Amino acid sequence: MERVRIGSNYLKQPTWKVFLGVPLIYFPIITTTPFVLLGVLLVKTHLKWIGGMNIRSYWDFVPAWATHRYQYDNQITYSTGAAWYNLRACRFYWIFNCKLYCPLSVALFRYAAYLVMVVENWWCPFDHDQKQEYSEGVIDKSYWHLHTIEREKLHPEDLSNPIWNEDAGQDETEKKE
Image (tube, rainbow, N blue to C red):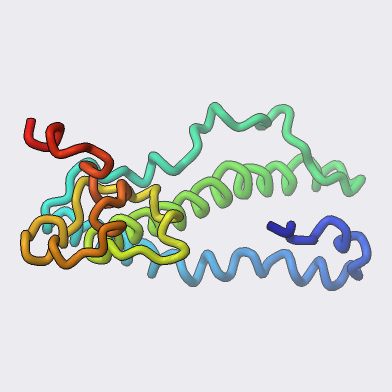
């Protein structure tokens, strides 16, 4: 896969463009977070109401605070030469971005994606070229595996995919035991 190119171009950007561009990372989070939270609540409720168990928690996606390499006392700050800025603004910026924004927002979107993968594996156990990417939302059996008539209609690869069939790969003697 080709890398996204940022570092090779960043220093070539005019200061005004960088200055105006930095706040743009916050607007999508501010505007989408309420909708993502609502979506997470609805999807998780859906999964619980149809019998879902062992659904991972949002906090499973948030890195432990102790795993951060830098703490308040040894954080890397952007130096402007102004002592008041370095002591106050950079510290606030670091705490907000590195301790809250980055881990919590990435975790929220990863958690929402995880829940959607679980729903997808439950209702749509049909293979396509990206389906292996849904393995983070692995389930025991899909809706279609629970009903004999529908199960018989599944393509052999969909029937035996371990992402949505925990019995995949077992021979018939193991299944009967």
